Image (cartoon, rainbow over all chains, first blue to last red; front, side, top):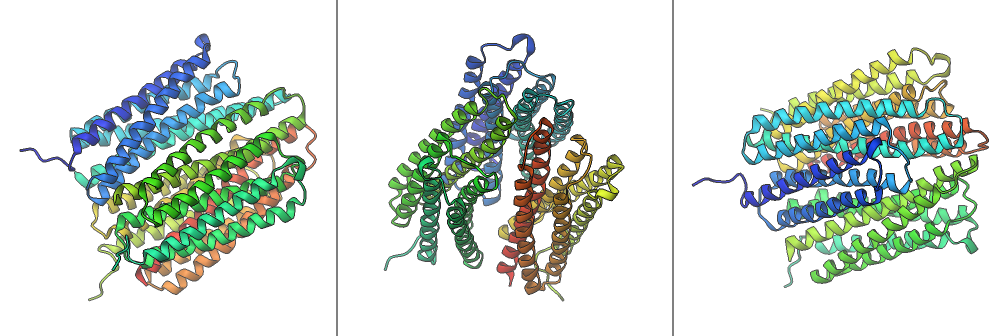
Length: 212
Length: 212
Length: 212
């Protein structure tokens, strides 16, 4: 007989798998959205991201409902709650960035948003792999993926800083000012999304440390 | 003999009742503040909201002090802590929005701030009812109110998005740019307040699930 | 034989001491940075703050690793986690403010940033003293320092409000608008740092209440 890490553990990991896969899908849709040569039908494309966001809400709610109804040890429980909440935060922030593209009537993506979106997609892919390895109890692999998430977060951080610096170069007109306000907010949402991925990595590390 | 959900439960619910009632009062004062036909004596009216904010700090501090000194099960304790903290966050954000009206020397409320304030007031009223039903252990009623809070949060979210979109239409002058910066921040505080109400609903649902 | 508050308590307090001392160092470097008569070599000076931020990350990671590997009571454990996380948040926000001075190519500090930096330095010094007294189990001293932290937070809050008000006075030119956007963000980071110090005080009070 094989004993699980938690009672009903399989259920939890299956939903986490779905949540991570749904997140990667949203990050991928966002990355495909912010390409100069391909920046059209924004309404339809953001709608697809919105559907991921809605799906994510359902999955998160299901995890938390199960957590509240299942007896698990308080500590692990808390970590699973954090993991679910932070995964959902990342998705919400990707959706917020996409929504702003539409609400602000952005005409063209910047080089920087494409770069941030690419690295964010890579981060979500690593998050997804880490969650798979957690299920398989391959803890050293989880830790390696966490280091990779942190490395990508640092890279997004640098791109964000460069993007901010560039925004404020040679501001001469009203439209430049409005441009700053809009893009500063979009960049901030993506940077926040990346920070929340780091929180996901921290939650994964906590689980590994307690169970290794 | 009737046994309570927690030891000293009555005390907790009484303070939560007071905190929710104090929050509704602040939301009501804010709603009354942001009316075009009535937008005067801003200093005096915001001072009333500030007094609610101070009262809320005292009540929150009292709850947390009691939580730290009382033995309750770790889980419920954590939920009560979350409930108290998020209720206080909503109040802080309403106060922040009110304070900005004064600091930014706003001359006239927008249609959108009035609408957000109205829905936020309705949300706090539902929060107050939900907390009453929690005390009475009428858990199915609590859950219905939580659904209502989520519905209102979605509505405030849509108004926020529309308000943002409108802010950025036809920006021609410096004063438009300053207008954007000011109102974007006020709207964001109200949208954040509404998000924290959703956190309150989540905390309530968690308590219900564990005790139903 | 003297029994500690927690198993391996000495280790924890030693790292907390180092984290608090590292935070005070960063706040002091930031305060020295934002002086009109001395506003030069920004790159070098912010690099020193960045090193504190990196050191803080290592210390926080070490605390959390120890917390995850050590058996301590769940409650205290949670408080120590909060304490470590909030201390690190303060440091991150001081670094964010410093980084913005560089990224935004700020030419001259404002009177208000100097004032906020001074009060923030004072706050971190009080935080450091409070953590020392916690180690010595002088709980009434800890509580007095917490009151002092809250008092300083209120003062920074007022300076922040005044600074915001001043930013929006007589905006006539594009460069004023850009000036607003830049300084509003820097002030907000410092105000956030001060709010996180209040969270540190709350975590300290929780520990005291449970152990007094």
